Image (cartoon, rainbow, N blue to C red; front, side):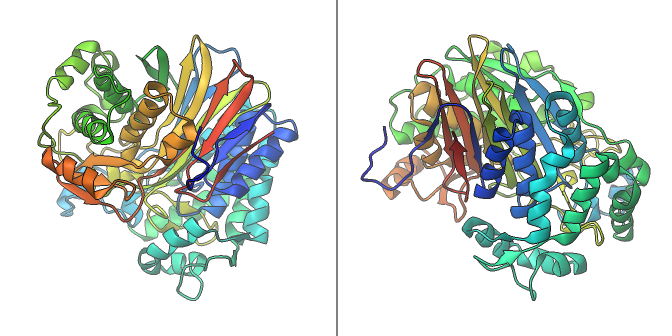
Length: 528
């Protein structure tokens, strides 16, 4: 139980169904979908579509998604990979001959063919109860009629003005008189609304062929991209076998590579060798930091498109690997961080959401453009903001994550699902780009080791060991920072928080759903 004399919010307790998202309009739309007879898949897709309109810097239909869906009674979740592939007309040799040392974050070269709509439509058809038109209706309404700019959205958007101002289409569609939309003002995206209407009528083919695809490919090619209409027409989402590990008697599931979810499991495997319950905050932060360093070094050595991976999942998740990595950790001294490929940033921009419906179906769903407003490449007629996920590729020949045409890059976005005794216990997600694998592990140690209330666990100050620095949120005290420095960490306090989180726990003993939403965002948990 939280201290009611301190700032904070209570977790939501509901008896039938619950949703947790990063924006109140998305949470409300998801609840309305459930109350109209939709299931968890319908509600998750409805909420995500709304977020693509009202949090357009964080996510969009020009991005990628992954999901873990646990139907009631299922002993293992269904996993879907909705990540996009590199343009077929580009090559590693071309980039190197042109003098590129890395793929730019802005512009056409950073764009993979979007995978979101392919995944949405496949999930809706295979596992939903509602058609895509009904699912998209709230998002269409907000795009055409407008939505009010909320505090976190306004704060983020203002920081992204310089990037948007560099592109003529972005300036026209996403700035107001050259500035970010102001807090409390009403913003519309009518061109995006029209595109959503096309998809509502004709499904995925309305995005990957016809006027929308022609608009996007034309814009990409005009900016020097190698994308083709054939690339868009070939886009599809894939069902994949989830990966998992046992942690303290709970089964933690993640989507397999090309996502980094397996690294969250590796960090948990390392931490399983320690008694994480009752540690002081400095010791806990130190151990998570050291496990993160080891896990992320494996990520950058081995994780990529599954077709390119040389390491087997079983080996990465083996107890032998966990023991070997744990042996590199000193409880009293910070190790030099292995070289990481984090792009020099604490986190990137993403949404995650969780839903449990009235029948016990549970879903963890995540959708992203990668950076804020992705590549800042926007279809001038369709209003679609395109991702910059191709900037995750490396341009070194022989690297596991080296660019190749038609290849999926290493992905940061990861939904999570905890199961116990063959039943779903907790769909959850911790957004924030590269931070996510470390964030998953840190959140789960709070909930599963310390039996911490989920809302308190989400509120807890976060740290992220990356690129030789231990980046602390301002919830840490200066005394704690000094103690971490004494262990050898190079500590800094960050200006922006580490990501966000949404989670729902199914408490079968008392018959309630307990939902939590991150105060670092504008959202909330709702239910009935």
